[in-house]
Image 1 (tube, helix red, strand yellow):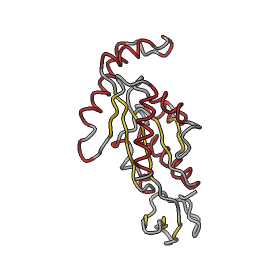
Image 2 (cartoon, one colour; image 1 turned 30 degrees about the vertical axis):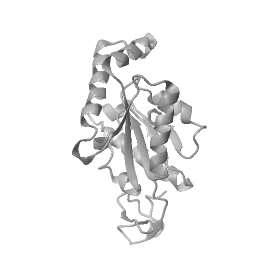
Image 3 (tube, one colour; image 1 turned 30 degrees about the horizontal axis):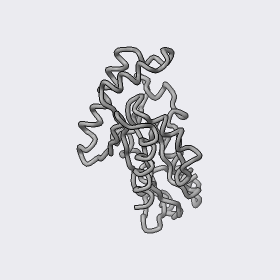
Length: 210
């Protein structure tokens, strides 16, 4: 919607943003397009830290935002060694969220790899008043226990997979506050599901109602 100029008809995602409108300004003809510039939120983290559980609990019950599961747009091509680019995956999500937001509600996407390095430099990021990151993490022993408790068909019993999920969880704990790219953290190790949901709702509410 916003990437096609209503003045000259050209497709350009890289419009200049005037936050006082807010307006998206066509770089070809200068046409101003007024739009809703809302916050964007991502919830990331390793498998079994609680992302899917929280997303399912919020869908249809917490209606101040639109809650979406990042996997619905995933294709294996995004990780292809030949042509894959995970940033393209998140740029697609930003474009979807930008257009969904024109209905007046911010979007929260739950997606494992939604860290700032994969998101904030993307061309579509300019259309949001702010992009916010929350990581659900877990202590190593508890994360391994949860992964091994899953059905075997999910492949989470694989030692290499468990090692990678631990590595990612610990990377988030160690690097979430680095380089000015803040990732808020919730450690779900000792939390009941209901408490984790409450904590995520509190985080979202602070962003949409500062």
